Length: 470
Ligand code: FUL
Image 1: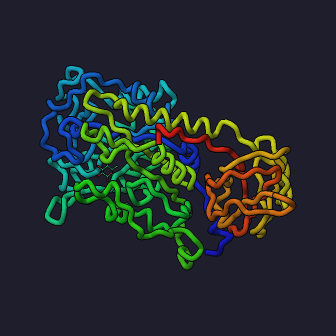
Image 2: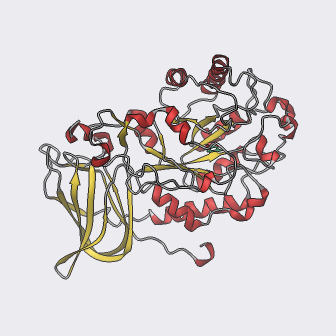
Image 3: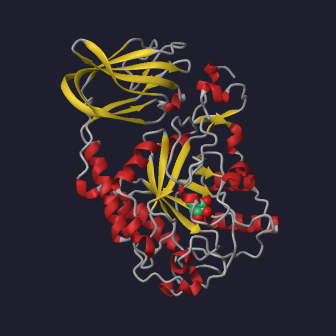
């Protein structure tokens, strides 16, 4: 494929809508919360599940305070315990003392999300340690489809179906062959706007659980990466507490011209970064003092959201059924910081001059260079000298991902001085540098694929972090 056609690979409508969410939360909650485990065995008694103060509204408000726009709930983790009263197994909240066995946590969370305007997504673990049909491939696939159907039809709009590739059966364990295609078909039929993530064709797992993105996160990558079996291979296989902090350097470059040279089958498959605010995915009181600092969370946020990926941050409710005070405070701090940072775009009233513009594209909501023009300069007059240390750039990804290299300069004493340079932009790039003061700023697009576009150009000055919250 030549570069013109590669650059023309575009997101689906559902991928575009999903990308615009930017930041949403993960809830790991279930029998493990009460058994104090990460991977339950599937044999824990449902009588353990007894949150005494469960309040899904408190969860959703805490997530919203951080600026999250959605939430994905572990409706069933690997232990097989279901948070809704499914018809297909008794291993669920129905058998627990919580709400007298009449509770439906999926409903409570979905309703709370709706009330606060957050999108709701589901995690339904394919690996199931409790379900007796697991390993009897056809029967289990039917069981899994039945459960999916319940979740996709009973709880309103679902924005993401998160298919985890983890499996700890090991070489001598049960062998389940998942009918991924049948799962996908059902999801498409019942929730056509939902993205299918990780072991699915719409959203690519970034490949680690430590919160790291690649230095260049391309959304156009080889189609082979979409194969669920490949994702499974790379997913967690042992519950030893290490996986969540490991960063593998394999496949560091998935989408540069060099990486995709000669590959004929390329697709739009954008990245999601999933990580936890604590060492574990589930709540453990022993980790109350190990909630990630604001600094760490900001690094993760800037890396992921500011690196052409979306961020899925896990915050696990405790045994009471509440987001613990420490995590809730951190979410609020994060949201406060981000709101302060992005309040005042110093380029909001700037004048933009483009070295070139595609015919007929003047005055459109975003800029586009003419066909075949891969380099361009954009001069920005801020009207008066301003001090900034953060640039936010965004391409019109509905026309593909195109920018490969850029630099940002300021005019000082009649000379252009570079303050920042980067490679890919994609949906969003947040670049941070030492504070610079200038009236005139220039963005040079140095390399791009067939023609660049630009939808977002913003400048900010980052608030200082109070020493107390570092
Ligand atoms: C992993 C699982 O094994 C963890 O328990 C957690 O659910 C994480 C999000 O995915 O693969």
